[in-house]
Figure (cartoon, helix red, strand yellow):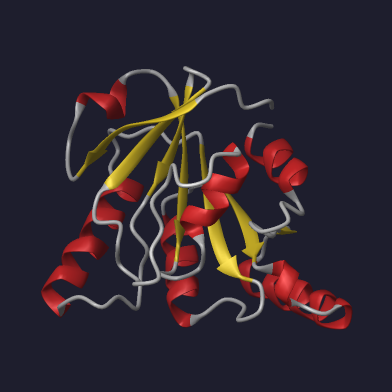
Length: 188
């Protein structure tokens, strides 16, 4: 898919007309600090469109980006470690679960981003369980693959496949390695 345009539309924290406007929605989810914003920016070829921060927990809404005037890339808050209160962390967790489990929202595809070097954490496994429990078809991207040496890549890929039960796409938001594979998988 060739990206011609990508713009921020809005952030939501509950029911909104954008959820049912008939456009396909591709949601991106991952642990805080996994590079979710960087992955979306690199896929869209637009630096800085999706705001990123060195401080985990920056995204506090479900953010919609309209791509080519016909499909949304949906940036969900990161789960797990964030420099916020427990109450605020629980609020973000509930927002994520609402978006993923609400029967009124049709998901075209969900992209789970895992750190290639770290592999699936306990929190990633909990998210995989939620996705599977609700029957979501999802794609697994192992981001930060550029930080792995050749032998480590093979081992990490095997571990991530075994723990997620899914095919895994090695990706680097820095080099865009795997970009064509991600596009072919999320738009199939």
